[in-house]
Length: 301
Image (cartoon, rainbow, N blue to C red; front, side, top):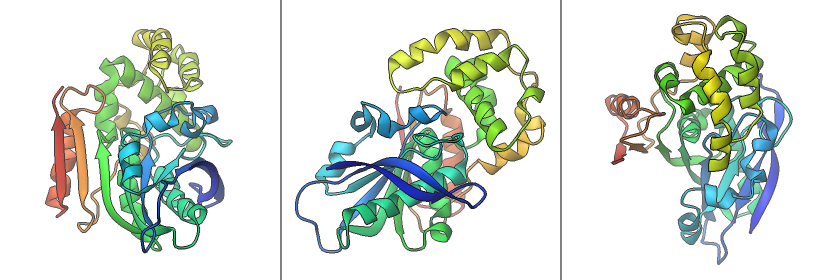
């Protein structure tokens, strides 16, 4: 059984907000203590409300590993994050926003399943933007959701060192897209002055990119035209990390190390040009130095 849900979470100023998402419940008898939950944190789909994964025709295909998770008897909670599927600006790559939405999606799944049918135990799994969200879920879990028990964090190609990734990615069309969406979102969420760091010619292009979703390969192809425009004119500064408040915002949304008792799985494609392998390997090294148990898979190609 699959449900579209609307649940309560917490906004960046501590205010109550509504967040949408989906909950998928496997068939079969419920084990003693209830079904474990996997919280799925989605990769980049866009920054406007119609880009919510729960509204997409391909939701189930987009949840990597969904079939296996249901076969193992897990409930899957799939948040849209704030501002996707609900009014307001999506706080794109804003770690606290993502982590709270993920944790509250687990609470929503437990409430929807009914008393005793879903356990307090959960793991979180995400890719790219969702990898960052998964790591922030691990950072926030003990403080924000002491009623839940996090047993592990799995992140594929997570967005970790944001300042490094954004400037390194400017050589690629996809990288320009992600940086443009981040600037568009943060200028609205934080009030950061976008006109101080991008050229006047780039502003309408950024607005156009922010208004489109990323769900299929067709969406990627349709963004090629605006992306080429950014090749001609985009940033007005050499490095975003040299300018405030962008430097502080990049640091705030770069995940730190997790509590050592939380096991971590990291996966990384060796030829990834958006999330660079060396950045993920650097984060793995930081986790190891902090005492975390880390399983790491470098996927060739």
